[in-house]
Length: 193
Image (cartoon, rainbow, N blue to C red; front, side):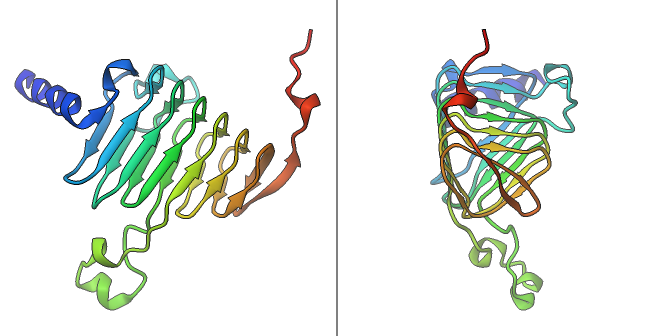
């Protein structure tokens, strides 16, 4: 068992960029397959241990880049028991928080066409589009961010939302599908005395 843990640590050091500057709580599953990239910015905090987030984590954090996928997580982000899975490209800006048990997935995993699904031609025919999440975003627990989504800076995603589409800076979005429910302004950003 110790041997496998050591091999996994060596794998992470060789494959994942900026690994030494990231703080992990619990065992995080992280894979960058051939011709794929995962980059995690300094000061980022990734929680996988059940007691690291008292909202309750249903799983460990899973970060996977596959079939040419690229994942870039900015500096000083926080991720709790969530899945980030790319076969295209996922960019997460600086200071963004991803709440407990979220999913950020830039592909459909399976083709829409019946014949391709039956032949298990998943990677060749599954639809994929990049995801871009701006700086200072907050993604509420149990939310799902789907392929082709762009979130501007300072976007708050309500808990349990299913997000697809393009959203501007400084908004609160919520629902299934997520819609803008509030526009944020300078007054909202002031810290009370």
